[in-house]
Image 1 (tube, rainbow over the protein chains, first blue to last red):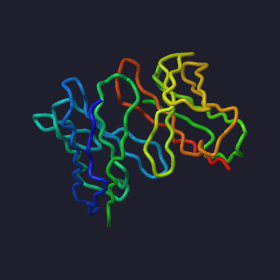
Image 2 (image 1 turned 180 degrees about the vertical axis):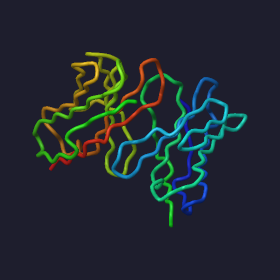
Image 3 (image 1 turned 60 degrees about the vertical axis):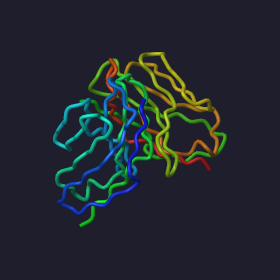
Length: 110
Length: 113
């Protein structure tokens, strides 16, 4: 699976959009981009995934660049409960284990 | 939707004692099941995964073992715990067929003293 690079930490004001970037320049054609988050002392939570088209669900939007070498997870109106570590993962739909890496620690402030 | 149950939620065990952590899944059949461990301040490490009853793959050589006696039951065991076994143990469930969408349980926080 391709490697991902994320900033170690980010801050966001409550009510604002949180835009979390991820670089995956070695992604191959059949690999998907997944986003999970882990709130302190809880298990990771699936957020969204995509192949090449932008995706949106009730939690977030995923924007993937045309060359697929990077993506951005958007939380449109961040709340304090969105404070968590966000993981960007590239995977080939193998059903195998996910490589969570170190992720981005997002702090949403009042 | 899938629900993953894990127990106990927290556990304090002496070095050398045995361990049994249980994970059960509701809401799906024939899932892929995973055990991960997260040491304090570290990332998630895959320990075992299973694609069916009695089928276990181990990722990291260690003193832990896993079993899957029923389709939706996954057990993590040890005969003798080490200090280094302390951590946050997470069970996850993925749909059969290759999807990488995994659903995680609430975890068990194990402290070995």
